[in-house]
Image 1 (spheres, rainbow, N blue to C red):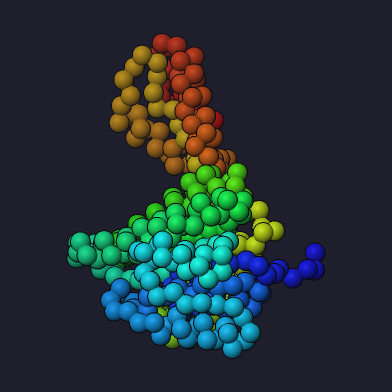
Image 2: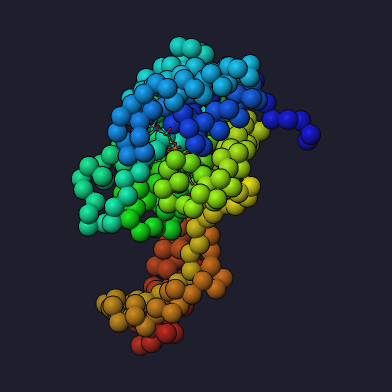
Length: 319
Ligand code: NAI
């Protein structure tokens, strides 16, 4: 339909909305009628310091354009307080965009306990705390839209980002389960892996790329995923430069490397390796149930194989 997507009457919390992507999300939601809680601790990129200026500036920007916004300066580690701000000020919470983040890049052996813990506390635990605080309200409303912010570093790995990549892919695991637990309450949870110029990326990207990859080319995906019309749930998307793509898991057909009444050996795994890693006719399991089916089927296939002296190569491929 040609109808524009409105967020009139919706209350949206964007964490880390004092700059970069979060600021753009907050402006875009407000422009389409949402009441926005602009949360930002106002610290530096490594997790130090704090200031109310970052959030205040974005709230002013929104209000100057006639939008509805309120600032919140608490850390996502105080998840309850962020949701309280939304409830006290606007009476409900419809959308949570978990976006706040910091970086503490180090090669793996140089990663200190603090580098590890801070990254996990802000990204993974912070998103958990904020989202849990909103959950019951969303359940009561029979409506909720949640965004987790992952990263290509988590999906593919990236040198010097062991702390960050593990927290970022942890968020995908969290989202996978929230999508399942929220489904029957119309609470949907999706994950984005954005690419955009910001104070986080200006340390690792050339300046012209930082300038070209605008946060405006990411925000429309987040808005769509958070709209009541959008039925997407449990999805993972890469987004940037004006392009959006969806990711999913792929599983090879694999190889049965065990025979009835025989010990399973590492040599059989070695000899089956090409088949194990061959993605021809790969399947795309999308649930634990679907994943488990293959194992149950293997049990009966091995059992049906009898005690014949078949070579491992003669064993059938798993479904
Ligand atoms: P940014 O540094 O401009 O924005 C992050 C904001 O989060 C900052 O304003 C910061 O003050 C705030 N923040 C940090 N710790 C906080 C806390 N404890 N509580 C509340 N607010 C806090 O960076 P950018 O690039 O906009 O990043 C947004 C999100 O997107 C992050 O989660 C980042 O990891 C993720 N991301 C960004 C990519 C990019 O290309 N820009 C790539 C992949 C992921």
